Length: 278
Ligand SMILES: Nc1nc2c(ncn2[C@@H]2O[C@H](COP(=O)(O)OP(=O)(O)OP(=O)(O)O)[C@@H](O)[C@H]2O)c(=O)[nH]1
Ligand SMILES: [Mg+2]
Image (cartoon, rainbow, N blue to C red):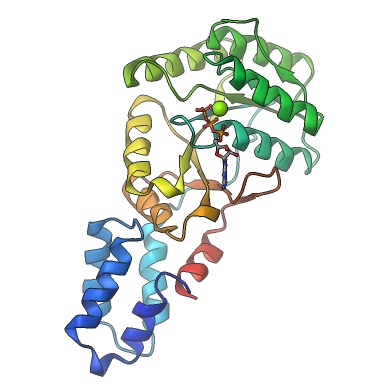
């Protein structure tokens, strides 16, 4: 059942509304990671609605909270350089692989850059994905600088005329400032060769409102052009998608729904809204 289905049926049969029902609905919505402000706004609006058009009206409000920016991945130049960023464990490396598969299946030529050089295992993990998918993966020597791997990757992407270069980055450094400084450096070095077209922030949907604070922190340090919302399979609480778009106006471009390379799709706002109301 969709997150808002109870609210919709409540408003439809509105004359018997008891305070207790409203409190229950509020609790349910708050547990879904929409965030308290949005929940209050929605409930205030719903209480004034007439029964018949409850679904349409609620959907309209929800739609107005979503970003109106394009959800398409930019393809403004060749290669189109995509930096994939986010805190550790959110699903960056897996999402790079999934996105690569998604793009190659629409006949795009893709190259991977393994710029998370802080853990040897991270480079291997991406390399393994690349081998499995038949996609060339650029990695540096042991203890190479992330920025130098990124630089090599973009040069290679230009040389082999890739449509896309997807660069995986580290999620964990000594502290937040180091992480943001490193990201800035990777971006600057890449841009000696080609502009970065997209910075995709990976957010784990199961982390709820914490995902929203991550998005705030990253977007203060870099211009985040889109979000990949992962682990929606493990979360009945997809409300965080609305909360993020409402608070930051960063469009969710893709979603992850499992650990396999096909558990990935472009984010479709209309079906997301339908799912919430169904
Ligand atoms: N269920 C589920 N698991 C996912 C999804 N995306 C990634 N994972 C799993 O989450 C774990 C972490 O994924 P990684 O891709 O290694 O995450 P990361 O952000 O690269 O992690 P670090 O490199 O350590 O910062 C792995 O076990 C993935 O299989 C998803 O959409 N659904
Ligand atoms: Mg990783």
